[in-house]
Length: 473
Image: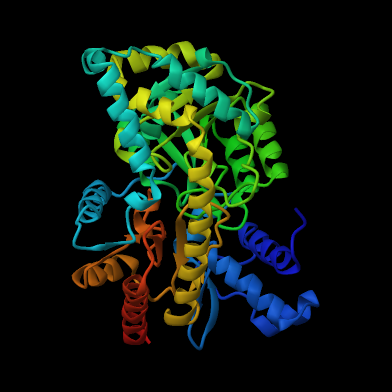
């Protein structure tokens, strides 16, 4: 995909920062001077600077200009990139945030869980009822690893939409996608090994890395283009990286998707440096485009990709049904699965298989994708109207998560606490990195039933942002 002029300008300035032309905390060239030096319009430079703010590279200081971020520049510098050290208070914070996201009295923009009206509840109810009538003994039966054959067959059929030709025996059923990723990490790493993750990224991946006693190098994930391949290459050159965890389709929390060219470059880089890619494709079927985006696994001519996904975002979060395709690591993965969980619930596997067989899933997806896209545009429009100047939102092409970059003076954790007191839940950006990087970012879930009450809640968050913003001026 050809870059726009402002993206080229942004990349040029970012490279100057990476090369040490502008040091952390220092002021960069003014908008007008950059316009003159680069022979582009002031509007183009403003767009480029806005993009760099969104990436977390620079920050605006009212009446003073633009400055290189103190902490981000160090993390992004190719001279200092290294495994990140976690903040000790992060697990407790995540636990508190997840518990607050379960409060039914709160308008929930926080947890990445679709509301029940976006799930095929009635169809699943019929599937479960039919199974219980015809096969009541199903509740007493164990479905040992690798899982129900009927479900694995249906998954193999669905994988064709993502460009993958696999057999049922290539697939292992797991307790959701998180469980699949844990198995993948266990198969390719040991304690003390180093892995690469996107930043920001899903907090569950960071917790998995911590539990397995792994080291992590965070590579920026841009909302417009995905993982930064330039910095990834630098990390691969300078560190022994065992695995690269990446979400190529509708990434959580940025909503980014990799272009075909970037996918091929990523696969080639990891092959060159003998690094296994662990692909999280949990949002893959929620792309708004007519055709589903191909998975990385479909490009994997080098057999260096482990594929992980689940039905938690599209069919039934509470069923906890995911799957993994491990390729050369499949035997190891099945062993870990068998030891850790022995068996996955038979009834839920068979119910989902039955739902997939009757053809209702594609109809459900078409309707859901359309609604999510409409909600996304409505949410972005409301934020543009009611949030402070300088707020930037992502433009996802799938999924149901919006990444919001607030003016640097707004603390998203304080905002979350203020909103929660008003009965509104958000998810502050702090939890999407090992280090306290995304302090003025938040993630908003728009897989909710939109109405005037939701409009008012977004407006209220904007008012709280304005209060913080004015207090810091």
